[in-house]
Length: 225
Ligand SMILES: O=C(O)COP(=O)(O)O
Ligand SMILES: [Mg+2]
Image 1 (cartoon, helix red, strand yellow):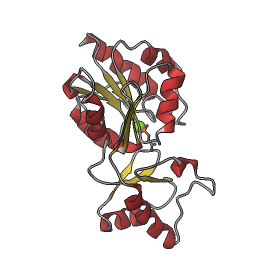
Image 2 (cartoon, rainbow, N blue to C red):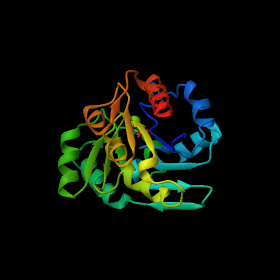
Image 3 (cartoon, helix red, strand yellow):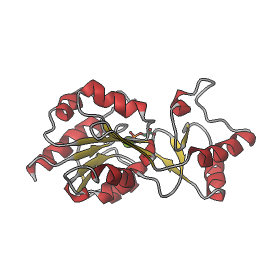
């Protein structure tokens, strides 16, 4: 039986430069069970990716802040942007910047957290977030200011509640700290070879391949189980 699949985007379906490796598109399109795209990106990105791939729009966005299932007509929010905004407002007041330029499309459609460029200093961001009771997760592509209880694992649960599957039926593939709870929550978690130490520790298996090679290794292994 083909297991339902939850998959991260950046670092897992993408190359290091965030471009999607085209080999993954048909694998996802032909996957014979539900696919959930689970990402730190804002909602429009995974929704568009599902549309372009040709799979039902069933996504976790913003590191678990938002979940959406088009077939079930369900949109859930699991986080609070205002709390994260207070943190970055204080960060900017201290003379730092979010690092995305004046036209910030990274945060424009973001509803439950705020992302800061990794070329900005992390230590003061963490310090301010902690003071506000929030967390900063480093995805390897951005720093995300979010509430500690908001993660991809919890958001996947909100989608799975409407499917004829259990969390333990799912296979997940990811590469970074924002995938930890997802990798732990599913039946079998795979980390790609480029994954950070947190994701590798949370996964049941670390595959040999990096980036999309690793995703393809993981789905081969999942189908062989
Ligand atoms: O947007 C990010 O920072 C990371 O995105 P990802 O969860 O798809 O890897
Ligand atoms: Mg990733």
